Length: 289
Ligand code: PAF
Image (cartoon, rainbow, N blue to C red; front, side, top):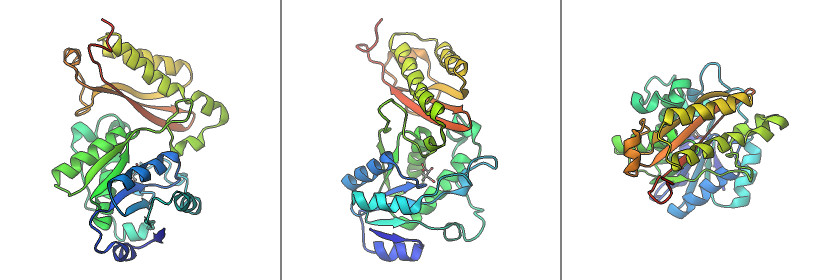
């Protein structure tokens, strides 16, 4: 694997390559990232990964400074898996040589809801850096994880609207055996918090069960899940049932017609904010009327 730190070196490595598969990350790589690389390998060649902790997507009171930076270990992991041909690991000066005054602004019906409501600058920062990374790497495919469900949808829509010649592939959320979605932020959990953390996914599964069993009062289902976690000490930002197609609020009547849903959640355990989601497809068979 070649490790490059500048756009010039990156372009030299990739010149003439027409099927680049790209996996952007912020590093501190774990199993979920490694499976994104494997999926990238199925859809293109060579695979390029990036590691860049993007200041633009962190709010002023968020954990940009604390975000784990483990480049040497990350390189070891990538070398061991042998899926990645070039790792692009720029520093801030390389990515933002001048203040980034041009930005991508996702539409508010997607960018200002859910994560966007609690992290107002997040999606502007994500889409802006993804657009820049795409300009540097010029991939024909890129892979994102479904754990960041809203991010995935916003990036897909951005590619469509800007006619970027990049096909986005999604990888299923990778979980520990107890259900906790893998995330770089899990390392901030104290042992007791780590033991409690799978309850977030359990709450989503309960929501799924309730929807599948025919309950159509979604506000009630969401409220019950929030309450359940709150009594266990979580500070819940949201647990919200949405349409998979556009993350809009579903009308229970549409559900009878098989509208695919997703329940998305964000909640804090101590100082660590976790997000997760679960897709729900209600079919007449799965629904116990
Ligand atoms: O999902 C992430 O790790 C980041 O949001 C991304 C897509 C690498 C942009 O910084």
